[in-house]
Image 1 (cartoon, helix red, strand yellow):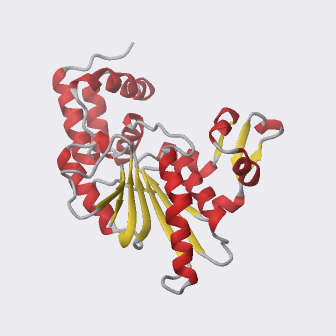
Image 2 (image 1 turned 90 degrees about the vertical axis):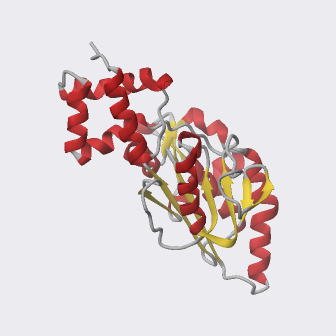
Image 3 (image 1 turned 180 degrees about the vertical axis):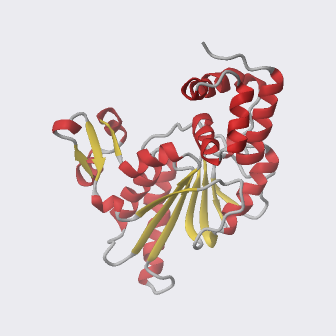
Length: 273
């Protein structure tokens, strides 16, 4: 049986989680916390949530496990179709044209922040490789997430065949491999995609220093879990790593209104620095 979670214990966990990773848990999220952390109590043979809270405070590795457990990771290939339409028809052709005129280097660096199980960065990789030859261009996608669990899935790049329906057929045939024998019923990202993606764990609410500035930054459906103050802090850090003239992409329910003054809206949820 799952242990009872008292109001005091819920307050302890919710305050700690918000402080450490910026995720705000309203009272309505109490059943979710019980369900997800209850599994850890049973696995560790702990009797109360207070016992587990002490374990989390004492063990940094268990802290990571807890953050994995409470993270919501909903994603799909080519999510937010208008974003990919904008890339295909306007932004990437403009970047290519500017490079051909000598107005910019032949490089394109993208950051997928909150990449979940990898569908977003692999979708971006497929899109980039339709426009740019990697033998002539320096292409790179840095994909980060708080959850080590979803990063393991993303690095593996293997998904159930039902998700193949999310990918246009020409791209599926060019970039993905169908599983056989023990991998029957799955498909896998090909080497051409893997060659331009790097995965790594990152907590966006902590001070972070990415290796460079980026031409495109995607942080979609991440800010909705943060308080307003934490959104400002995270967005400031993200924009610091976006090159002037670069584009910033948010999720369909997110906005920079009241969060950041500088970037200009291009279409809803896409901003120009």
